[in-house]
Image (cartoon, rainbow, N blue to C red; front, side, top):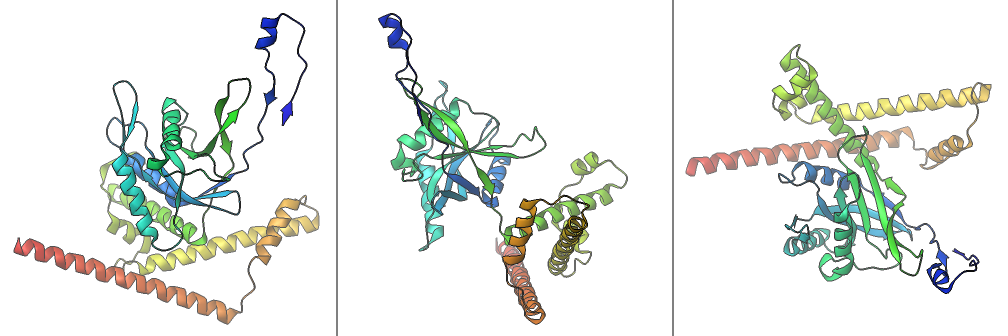
Length: 348
């Protein structure tokens, strides 16, 4: 959108200083969807960063779908260092090796492309411009190739300081701002959505349950000590966490699966009950109707076809058998590793 304005009468030098145009670019049409594995990888890299390293940077991998939606599904950390002069040095060999490894993991299917880069921190610094410039200018090394609609690398910033009691995740894109004769650039925030599938939500819920069970187990071990003392005093024990979660550690994994399914069904029943109460209050005139909530409930009810009870029970039985098979194979693998370790220690 261009806006023109008349120039005031003055000397020739004053007229030269007046901008000839004022150009405001439209909001970037891109939308960003981030998968949970990307955030977990970034948080894990932040915990494992080297001593004295303030920020963690890395490469974002994904695809462009639905025309203008950038799906960020994977990432890897880029090793870097700062010289005495403050210049950024990204290790080229490590970046190319990790990129080739990710491409091999994809196999013959749709391969992820480099869609941008990430950094931990709460604000943009000179490091931000340096890394962004490296991804743009050295495309043969960074593997980022501009193509419509992704003409600029996406910058994902994750604030791991937790200074606002939440995990701040923001996506930016560098856009030109033609305010005067000399063009300048700025980072403009993009709409971001944390995309979680049903399996992702189930896995995250189970991780949170194990974390809570481990904390309870530590509380039992410490007795009447405070929470801080319990967290610092006793080392982590996965066996204790599973025992606290399942109450039957003899069959590891199976009670956890059953309890996870039961908790999910209880949560679903609670949500349905709350929706029923809200709908009844709206019908009775006790609650003001919200069209947005109504459209959401209608969409949720129509998204899946209603299944017969026998078909639903068969689906649950098949899923349970698959989970039991996974647990059985996991136990066999654990036993094989234990036997191999015994043999290695015996002969060597």
